[in-house]
Length: 133
Image 1 (cartoon, one colour):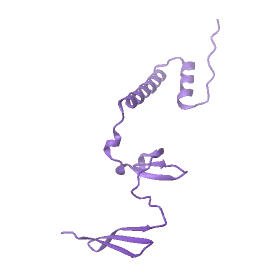
Image 2 (cartoon, one colour):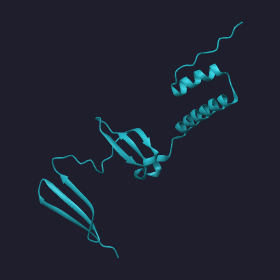
Image 3 (cartoon, helix red, strand yellow):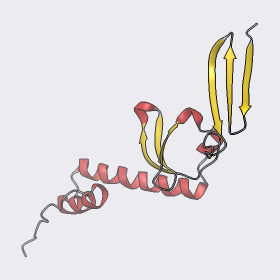
Image 4 (cartoon, helix red, strand yellow):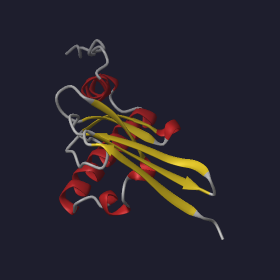
C-alpha cells in the first residue's frame, strides 16, 4: 500500500509551506505568503488567444495583459457542450466554407470565387473578369 504524507510548516505567521510526500518522495510543494495574492485554484474569465493542437493546450489571456497556458486535460468535459444556437452558427459557417471549396473544384465563375476567397481568407483581390458586350 502506497503511503502519502502531508507536512505543513506554519512556524512563521506571514508564510505557510506545504509538502506532499508519496512514499517518501516529494510529490507536491506549495508556498503561501500572506502578502501575495494566491492565483492557483482561483477561477478566472479568460479569452482563448491561440489553440495549439500539438501541445494539446490553449494559450489564454485573463485580463490585465496577463497570459496563461491551459492544458486540454484540465478542462472539464461539461465545458465542451456547445449551446445549440452557437452550434448552428458554426455548422452554417462550415457548410458555407465547404460550398466555396466545392465551387472552386467544379470551376465556378473565377471572378466570383476570387471575391469570396478574399472575404474568407483575406487574400488580395484578384482582377475581376470584364465581360464585353
